[in-house]
Image (tube, rainbow over all chains, first blue to last red; front, side, top):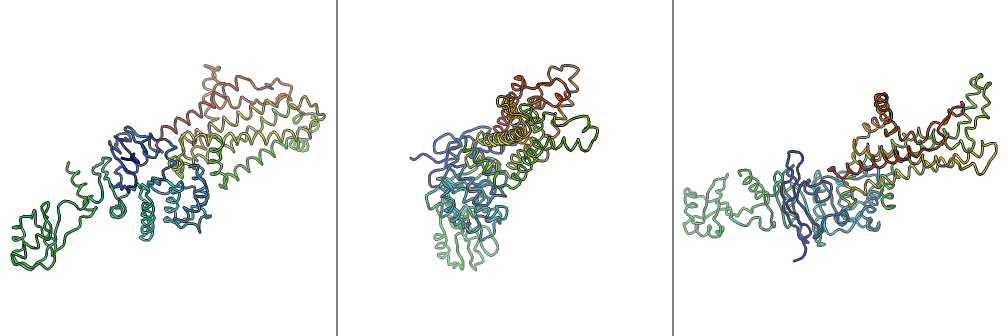
Length: 300
Length: 267
């Protein structure tokens, strides 16, 4: 198997008594779009800060491309943490020139990345005159400057209007299609579900879940049923695949046992002489899973 | 190394404040150091008594080799203006949080410090170059006769001046990194001499031997006040090796503290 892009072992950060990140283990492989989820203050940015050398870890270690981290390796990674940071008095072009000098890369790339984020027309204006969306886009341009194989984006759509969010999402998908590995921290679950292949959930500095996004929605199904029949709940409970029946507004929600699906429930009801007027499988969203995982961990 | 200097200069050369502060510094430095004779003439005109008792043309203010120590001593007062620029340059990195982004983009913390130190070296060298030009021009204008062997006899003060500038700017850089806020840093910087004077006054009775080892004291001791010699008093008209050694020591300490601070902090 190819060397993982990122391996994290037992990474820990304490700020005084507060444990911001606790013993995190992670692995990100080539080509993954890896989402880091968690409520505000769950340690996402601190973790990324450690991976990018701005926060000194209390304990643990990590490696990029199988090598111990150095500033030389950081030059090959494009990263935007928290919010865009640039010199306000410099123009977009000059800011990128400065970053290109730091990354020791060619100035030729600047025109290309400005084009990708559609900032070419405003490149000579001072950064402080940019709108928030333009600032975010310049940050992505700057992260792309060195043609990095890994891109780290922390809340890239924070504070953007719906159009801006859609634009950034398109850019991310386009970059991912080029085979780049992307690590995306966000608390917008919808966003992660739309663009990510893998995800991890942090809660109070602990890693509480990690796996492929495709696994979300596997496992037990929940089926919505509407039928005009007085004894519907009793009949639903008779079905051998039923785990639990709840009334939710006009629906009956049937939680199914593992391995049972809506088709079998439909046949069962039909054989009982009940004709349903509505039958639908609820698609389990990442949001639901996320809340469930957080709730599970709350009780522990 | 040059690469790191280029990074810091790129941040500064498009910054209007940088040009304004540096412009003010070099203009005031140039005018003040070059106009000593004009000042004496004005003084002689203003106060009849002074003009009658002293023939100002007999004061060898700008005569080689006296000119070196005279001009360089006066120039020392202006270093505070340049220090303000260093404060702004380093505290901006914290206010804008660009120091964090620089590290993320692939600078090491040591490289970041080096880039700031190299700018300090450059600013010190530019000050030296400016003074060299002023000394040579005014020296040739005012010296009654040019004795070629005497022109550069006291040029060693130039090295002391460089050390004075670079140590003081290193001190400023360290303060900026420790305090991180421009206003507070400037206040502490301006009070440094005064705070040190208070401490010195208190230990003067106990252990006066310690006094030359104080940081601000050691920097000012590099080039001592020369003008008393025109009132027939003994002065130290050379750069003492002890002062150089102490100032060098502080230079290393200031930059090492900056290094430790940068290394340890979460940005």
